[in-house]
Length: 189
Image (cartoon, rainbow, N blue to C red):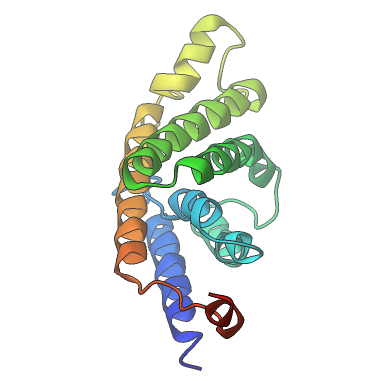
């Protein structure tokens, strides 16, 4: 059980932050840990571990966040974010080759910007609130639909959340002890 305690604790904190963030969307809209955790997991972890934590947190909390925000549990809204997730994965795979603090923090800003741009492109394409003109495209990218919060707040909060949670991940990673050598590797030396 002690071996799983850190993973359970991280999972619980991430899930709580995601659900609480959805309960108060006007306070910190889209200030979420999952994009940063996806980025850092792919950049630093190996094997199935790199996909397991972000996938579990997202798949188990998405129904709750959808309900809290007034969306159906299963809808095409979930598919709308796939281009943004693909961009985060691509940036994370690039970051694996440059996995130090400064490039990782820069990657978190690039991931937030790419996610924002791509998901707003999808919104522009499918949302009837946006006129299918250059002005409608600019509205989707910056001001958002009339009567709602500007979309640039989404970018600001996602960038801030990515930087914060990436920084926390980097600090946690630095504070962990280095992995011990396997007995067969130690004998071979």
